Length: 235
Image (tube, rainbow, N blue to C red; front, side, top):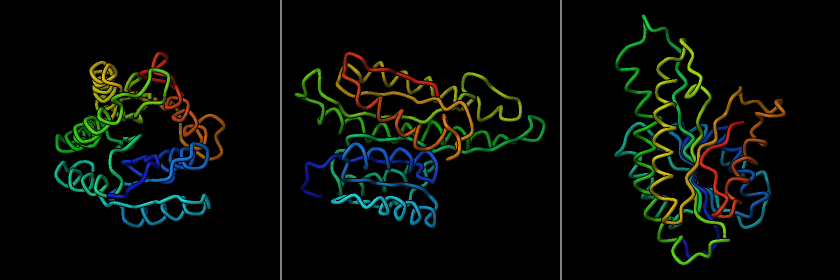
């Protein structure tokens, strides 16, 4: 394990949109020095590492870990490697999702299960790993200080379902409910749990839904004092 007091952010579901947008803000503006990026796409992971290194912020360690969020054992193995490298995380962003479009008449039960596994089972596995570590890190912190956080990228479909994304809408609704349950249980133990509900297409050209702006929304959540914690925010 790296002997360091530098703060660590773990991004599960890394990618050129929200994942790297959030990581970039936390590194460049928040002073985070350790970044763990997880994705099942090795090529994309290499590109994401390069993107963060191009920020040219000194003393930043960026590491990639290949992991399938829909496979609990594979994800557990990768998270154990993250812990061995960086210790207890300060922020975990669960950003994994399966963006599959399908008509009710054609979609299969197997596809519905896959949607649920990525959005909810993966989050469950992540939370079971992260929260005990974060509780230990939160012990003794004053009320006014910034606390460890588990953040989840959710979507407007969880509240405003669309027929062509009926399975994803169901899965996102379940994910939001699960995130709220985690917040109710673990906020008293010093961990901020919150969801950012993205209500539009993520694009660098979008003023509201650019990766940069979404990253700042996550940073604003992290910077909240404990008495002001928000359980969800919609962009």
